[in-house]
Image 1 (tube, one colour):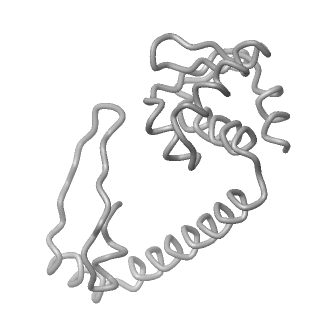
Image 2 (cartoon, rainbow, N blue to C red; image 1 turned 90 degrees about the horizontal axis):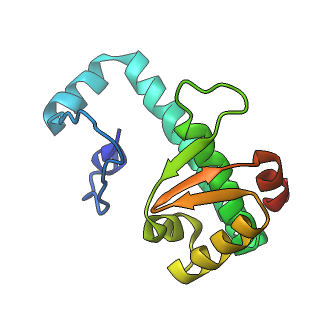
Image 3 (cartoon, rainbow, N blue to C red; image 1 turned 90 degrees about the vertical axis):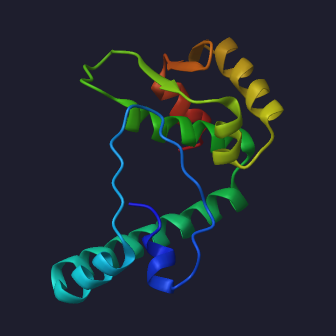
Length: 149
């Protein structure tokens, strides 16, 4: 779900989103959402739990940005994305991440050029391969080590 933070805070939603794969998108009008929220203690608790989790993730992300190098942050992001991109995964199977270098740079908080340089280094180290915009993780253990985890 996107936008509910701003709705609850009675603010405008300043962000945008793009899908990475075929998706179904649904819109819930503000009045309907707030009406259901007022009537459902379960939904209210789940949203509170979601907001609390997102706050913890945000706090961890701030610490990550402050304490880790770009290389470590990028490696960690690739590890996390590898987990998200697993579909019908079998141990030993390659996982492909399909994302633009600009989007990766935005996630890591660096310039596109830094991502390209680190990708080249990771390829030379046998950690991954690239095919166009696809990144294929070949050695997740080396990637975790590069993330300093």
